Length: 264
Image (cartoon, rainbow, N blue to C red; front, side, top):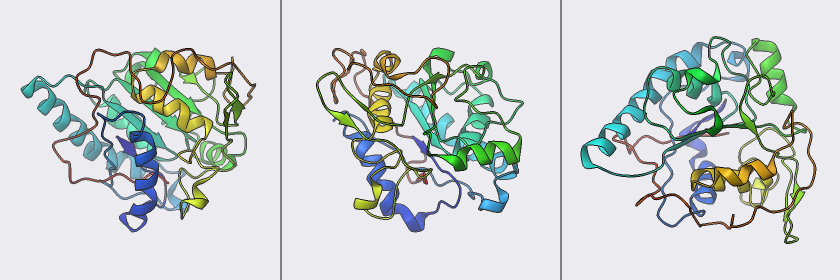
């Protein structure tokens, strides 16, 4: 499930769908929900938590609905929440509001997490909470500064960090760097260099997390901070589209399946 950043709306749905489809290609038996359940903030509203506070109960309702369906029908699946920018604030508040049996939480270019929320409040094992911020993503840092919210990509916050600045894998494949703040662009060509763009380091890591291969992400991290990167070998057995979990379905669906998510 993807959660939106600022200035996101259904008007850019085609752009968001491209990013969602790239995540989904990691496993044939997976699905991605794009959620537009609340009003995303404008740039002027980003320093305030108001939009996150408004949106969190709506997102929590979707997560609770999916969890109820999963429980009632005995569905065994992995549920991951991937949030971008201001969406990380909305998602963190939603996750802290109850245990919806979410397996993983991924934060991309976070505009900051409300200071009252710590990693232990998310109802997810700390080892399965991830964060990444590209060195070129200055807007994420500005959002944290202006709002006073916490940067989840710092070692003190406790998330597992992974890089978005590009690297070459042991097999010679190159993963591209994120060159700004956006999750997607305005076209397929413009998606390059975005957090959910084709063949980026961040997308590579996300695909592994949502298919139960979070163990492989450890080989993509930089000790101390995700803001500094170094080339590392590829993780053995971490090919796209494979999974080591005993799940009959790797799905992200919900009782509110009509709801769509925007990540921008």
